[in-house]
Image 1: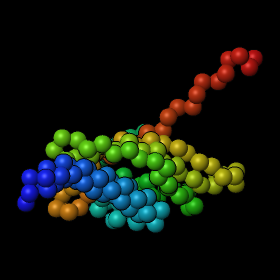
Image 2 (image 1 turned 60 degrees about the horizontal axis):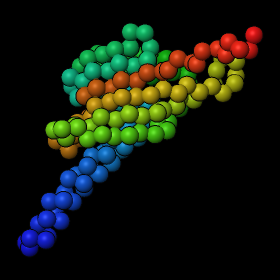
Image 3 (image 1 turned 30 degrees about the horizontal axis):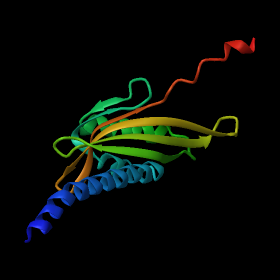
Length: 156
């Protein structure tokens, strides 16, 4: 290999590796979206490391390890409105030292409310994802729903 080829390879390799990791993170989130929309608990659970930690928006929706995560996923899928659909709106991935990824995402859950009208909940995610034996898996999965803005006090 020539010196120029070696220099180009050493320069491009980290960029290509980062791009592949970011693509893996996007594909992983799209698989989460597909599995949730299909109400496929086994497919959702397969996206987590065995010792992963989960913190979802609802009171008490925290889990650590496969057994607890399975209970949380089952409960969540059972309680979802029948027509609920999840959609990832955006995601930013940051490569961390050691090759893990941090992701910051914006998601939407849409469904028909009890009043028969369309409803949507936006939530944000912050995750740590790791590639293990060719599989991309959650290490940490944290989702939260922001508080609505304060009422406009000048409207009185």
